[in-house]
Length: 333
Ligand code: A2P
Image (cartoon, rainbow, N blue to C red; front, top):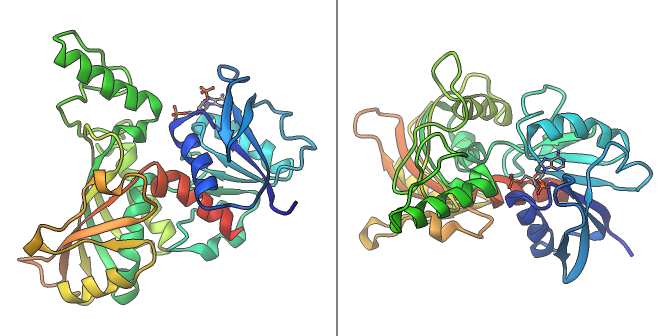
């Protein structure tokens, strides 16, 4: 039987489950599949292509002499820091969804529509970028190829699934409790998320930006091979289950008209253009849910800055923002 021996680490999590579904949906050539998680869920069964597969505990010896060729990791930064080098040493290529390795110069940070060639310099670990960064650079790539992007000001509207299964559960629980007049608990998010928005994702840093915001600044430069792209990000959690949205303002070296931008977006891989104000056509997260693409709309030339352009983009954070980007990297391998 041809195909690869593939492991999903963090298989029981929100992204891990989507990795499994994406392997199925994209008909990834799998000879054998293995699922790993913590001891908490070892022994559970998950389906792959209709078959029951048992979840195994991730241990330091779990990959020894197993012939595992590709390991899709989505089990958090600490787990990745501890286990990725061990798994790579055992012979698998790790494609890691956490932030643990992203800014390591020895580790490629890859979005297949933008910098697929970087996969080549891997030494056993390839990093999947931050979900908000992925959809933004997919949208920026055709513009940047036409006229260099110099400045980006982005505000994000990020769904609770970006915080994993516990984020999803917290939105449901708070919503039900508020409707039933019961007290709510905020554990995963710093404030109430139901019927609210929170301008804080991850911890604050010394410069008063959050870690999530600085990921967008630094990862964009690395993926687009341009140390000079000047990004300012404000990352906001919103009570949406699935799908991140972004309001993006850019300044480019030469002017990009609305018509030119529409033409560039419509031809770019991984982008679906939904932009027609006359019919109210623009993308929203419920329309991008369960899709692999990045949706772009609300394209406007800036009113004040000659080379300024505004647009809106939406993508499924669990898929293009995580699982399907990782599987696309595996497809390149
Ligand atoms: P488990 O279900 O056993 O806790 P999410 O991002 O949705 O919270 O999912 C995190 C994923 O990472 C889950 O599959 C979780 O497994 C897994 N995980 C967390 N800690 C570890 C660990 N120390 N070793 C292996 N898997 C882990």
